[in-house]
Length: 125
Length: 110
Image 1 (cartoon, chains in turn purple, yellow):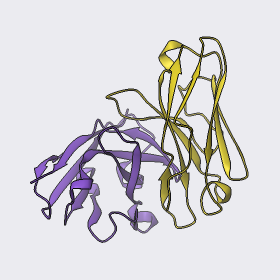
Image 2: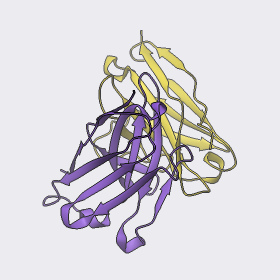
Image 3: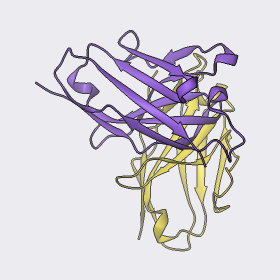
Image 4: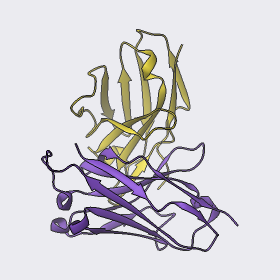
């Protein structure tokens, strides 16, 4: 069973940067390999709903990224298939970026079938 | 890209059936066969219930079903159970190759 574990969350001042990691495991018994997975980051502000923030597709598919408007130009998603890890580099952080950040893997283009437990980012002075 | 519109709350009694709507626009729900639904219990990560409008992943109860007509998708839950009480979110692929979630619906089992 594929599992995702996020790390790197914490407290950061407005204008600061943070890099989140998402390590995937459990592929031995799976039909999937990490390198073929599309991976998304989704966040949830306190007491609010889910917000998709970005996705990276497989390298074989071009490795391209897409982002939601609120984070475009500030956040960057990358992947290291040799480490089965996807990253979220967050720059120019704002207080409204405070949220639980989940990483997820896609089962199809429009659906995320496996989710991590989330990591909390607090942007505050 | 604006969030998809869902009712803030719905409720039903055990054994009953309920439906949650998800209304979008010509750039998302209406244009996409990639509508998905997620269930989230408090303090937990979301769980995929439905993908590609009406498909259930392995292990998801057949009490959950999805459909779409025009710019509105729907999630139906039959035979309501206490453990169905949770927040539910729809999600759609967009014509810009991004994804957008609905605002979420809180289901209360009376």
